[in-house]
Amino acid sequence: MVVLNKIYTRTGDDGSTGLGTGERRKKYDLRVAAYGTVDETNAAVGLARLHTAGDTDLDAMLARIQNDLFDLGADLAVPEAPADKEAKRPPRERLRVVDAQVTRLEGEIDALNADLAPLTSFILPGGNAAAAYLHLARTVCRRAERLMVELAGMPNEIVSPAAIQYINRLSDFLFVAARYVNGKGADDVLWVPGQNR
Image 1 (cartoon, rainbow, N blue to C red):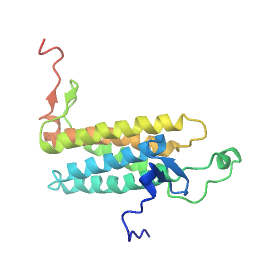
Image 2: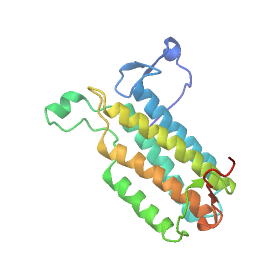
Image 3: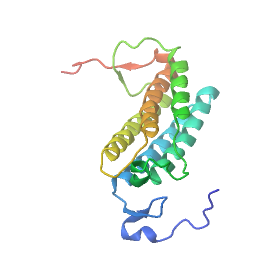
């Protein structure tokens, strides 16, 4: 259980922040940027949900995703120790994104995509408000993915494969969901290459 009695602590006034392990890192550290961008993704999903409340199934999916994104942030904020990986010891019991969360997303993508009109062009982010906000969430999600992959490529920085798969699948989900709320693809705004030359 998390208890937050005091919101400001002054510990970050020196430009550092604490990971879940207690380790201090600069606020511009790549790991901090990665979980901060996951948090931005969550906020963008929350904004999109203001416009999806009429579709209870989709809104329930987005609510689960918001909770998953907190799981993902916690996963990133408490890094696995490289020594655990090298010694082939199981990591300390921490909240981690798991394969089942990725599988659930894939099933939801397939369910939403089954009703969509075939895609014949790239589409522009837009249409109705729900679609536009879902596209915004998708682009923030892609940025989080880039940061996570970059972090995973650094020496002594571990990001689980399930976490990277989850964020990758999430951007696909958000794309499909945007099309779904855009009249199941009928109201997508199509890109016309070179239209304004």
